Image 1 (cartoon, rainbow, N blue to C red):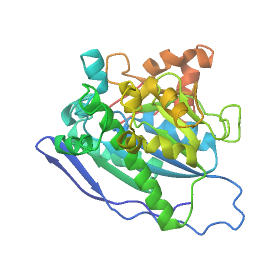
Image 2 (cartoon, one colour; image 1 turned 60 degrees about the vertical axis):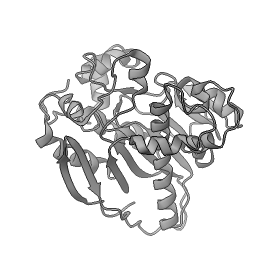
Image 3 (cartoon, rainbow, N blue to C red; image 1 turned 90 degrees about the vertical axis):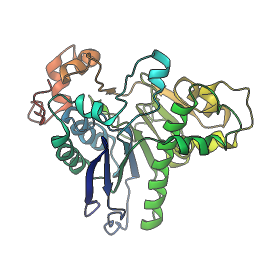
Image 4 (cartoon, helix red, strand yellow; image 1 turned 180 degrees about the vertical axis):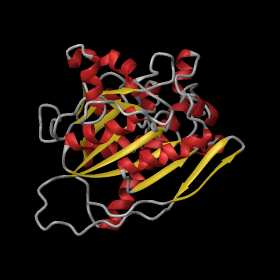
Length: 333
């Protein structure tokens, strides 16, 4: 159990860019049990904050992921408020993610700037992270510095967006190591998850080796980067893909292996000897793209897992009373 909570120090809108600073101190851990039989599980919520403040997203994480997976959980959050370098936009020619602050806020309907911060605080309180950062995307100067250390792939048209993803992922590992040093503990299992996805059904318990084979990284087969599970040793490779890219000498690899993401992940982890597999994981991204405006829209994609019933899906996403929760921007079902 973790005591206390990171305090919100300041929040201001600067030239349209939302900057939120949290206390740098970590929560103080409670006294360890002498005979701890449950594994320590670290969760890092990582990526564009986007729809994180919606109840259909943040309220699904604890019951359907953290409590269902089991173990002794510790939550971290490293999120961005902007996405300047979108791989989706490069691939498709249009943004699948909100490119700037006003669009992030605008995509939430009536939830404008004056209600975003209260909603964000509420979401954070529900998940109770021990360490949290909410900041803008990687700057052009930062990208230039990183690319100066890359032997391969720095000039590819996708490099900025892929490097940005790997930078954010590496920040998770920094938080995890900082916590382990402070508490003199080590995590047994680690989970990466995006902050803009709803968990529509409970995941398998950590002890289910059919779902989570020992020593194997397990990623969702649909979106490929919506969630990844594994032990600490394997997940270290997940969070440190940027460092691998900087150390890599084989420039003959395709870009999604030079900067390991998406469909290139399987080949990447095979090449470094880390067992890796795709599995169906009950998580779906909530985007502002006209097809994902309500929880029912999300459930349309996954209703086959609930006997084709919207209501059963909604009950899984929301409260034990069987009714979805109304957010500050109105009904989302």
